[in-house]
Length: 222
Image (cartoon, rainbow, N blue to C red; front, top):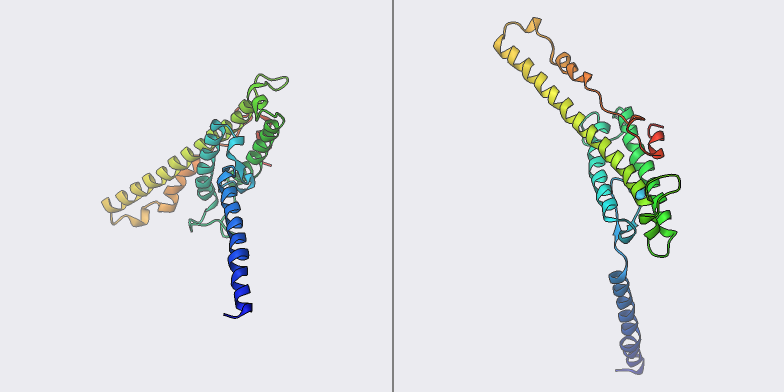
């Protein structure tokens, strides 16, 4: 072994390897000690939120909204039923409302609460216990009311979609039964597309001023 080779081996053994071990150890410790971050995939504007900065009730409500909102976007946004929302779909008022709630109003409400949370050095004690001036609720309760209003609205939309699609199935069955019972009366049969129009009378619920208990909902359709 030449002197240069020996120096190179010494450099690797006593320089590179210890440095790599220290770096990997630092990264491992940092990863283990880093706070757990929450992510709501259907609401990317929320970003990553430290788990400890949100109460359990708020996290539960956001998880429910995230799950329901993902379904509602497809139900009301994927109008041509091709499994994706694109330029081929017809955008309606209900879809825009859902989009505004998940992309703008919910992230804003959570951000407002987190500012209240960060005002106190005792990690949210004020936001959870101190009532907002000229009101009878704390910051935590105010956020929960916002999320409850949205959660209830999403439940109404899911129920409306269920009954609307159910009526389409009933109309299809009536058409097929009539056709099979009277095979020679096709010329006088009401087309299936016309029978399906019976379901159009079922309107999707929208947020009304009577249901809104917080300022964030006043601008939902804008």
